[in-house]
Amino acid sequence: MVQKRIVFIVIMNILSGCGTAGADRIPSDSPVTVIEVKAENWKFNKDIYKVFADEPITINFKSIEGKHVFAIKGMESIKIKGKGSIKETFEPGEYQLYCPIANKNGHTEMVATLIAVEEE
Image 1 (tube, rainbow, N blue to C red):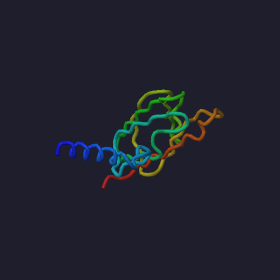
Image 2 (cartoon, one colour):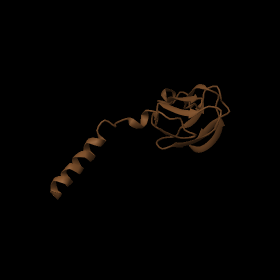
Image 3 (cartoon, one colour):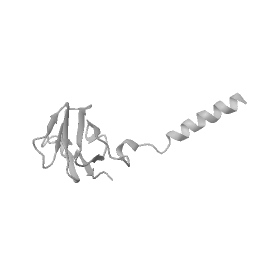
Image 4 (cartoon, rainbow, N blue to C red):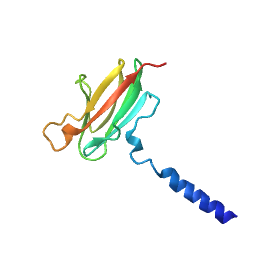
């Protein structure tokens, strides 16, 4: 009986891991007030980040592979090189996150979307 239970638990753990490949690239349904943006060659850890509009949002950025810079299109005063944090308030809407290192390998393809939604 104990062996069957162990086999069952092992199988359930294996199955629970199935279908989660790339799950970290999908936004959660709920907006957050802190986001962790990680950059590696040549992508961010998520395609979409969802945050609350009109609330202070902390963005923690870390370049974990290669040298990257975090920027927000239309908010060019916001740049984080390599590693750092900022606190910003966003109006409702969509913002493009990108790596502004021009003309270098895959940096220009590094884009993601930050969606600021109003709290219901």
